[in-house]
Amino acid sequence: MTATRILDVHIGGARVRVHRRSMIYGVIVCVLILVVAVLTLTVGSAAVPPLELPAALVGRGSTIDSYLLGVLLGPRLVTGVFAGALLGVSGTLVQTLTRNPLGSPDVIGISAGAGAGAAAAAMFGGGLVPTPLGAVAGAGLAVLILLVATRGKLSSPNRIIIAGVGISAFGVAFTYFALTTFQQQDAAALAAYIVGSLEAKDWTAALSVVAGVIVLVPASITLSGQLSLIELGDDFAEALGTSVARTRTLALLTAIACAAVAVGAVGPIAFVALSAPQIAKRIARTSGAAVVISALTGAAIIALGDLLVQQLPVTLPVGVLTAFIGAVYLGVVLAGEWKKGTVG
Image (cartoon, rainbow, N blue to C red; front, side, top):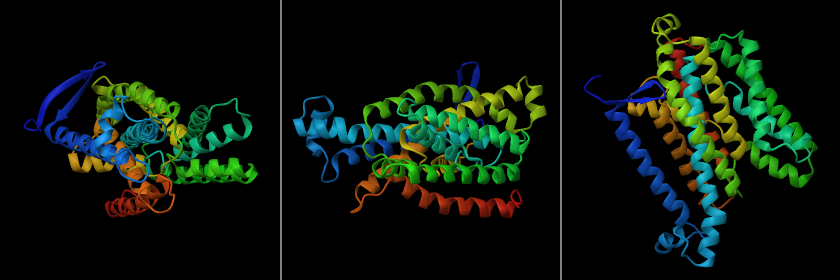
């Protein structure tokens, strides 16, 4: 362990260990995101010519290039990258908190609750209740129901999964009920939202997720060291001076906020929060709440997924692609957990 650790970073009183493998992985993912971003802006029928991209980025491009970059492609790219980062952070917090690789916002009902809350805001808010606020309220209600259903035992995988399935089913049912009662145009927009889409995003959506990352990622990094101790056992963590109840509460609230801000901007894009932390940890070989590399992985997943769907001959929300891939991944994880005897 000592051979691979290169430095200790102190953030908000918490010590964060940085390992060489994690740093290399993070750099590679950053490069991948940059490459995907350039391809997103320059590949396709409605794209900025590659040689014209530098001028467009500094505001010296043609009118068409400026429109493509500033209205169509730029907000979509920024929204997807930062929303993916928030989902990755939310996933790693929940998985570390519950000590369960299946404990993502998707599986335990947070994403479905946020989606239902957003639908309720659109349905009953009369345009006065912002969609992100509805998403936060829905996610909070989902967690409250989860705590009641599991009697506060968030470290019990079976209880969490069973309760989460029920919460997700209710959230999806309510969202589809909203779909059937909306006018056709509103229903089409809501349908695109609930599967997770980056279509027609503006800078308001982009700035909301950027602000979320600026506020919530540092808070998550601060909590990550204490969560790593809790993974080793509550008694051990308490003996080292960590307030287990306080840390769990703060981590859960932060995870809810991350998921709610992301869902409020792009809808409940499925399985990013589940898969991003696991991919990051398995490649970088880290434990605990790997906040930064999970955020980068989530950003890369959505950016790459959106690049792929933009090149398809049919219009396909990015959430459909991530749901398909995530369902396969969830099956693999479930099979592994079943073999280890942690689920069943």
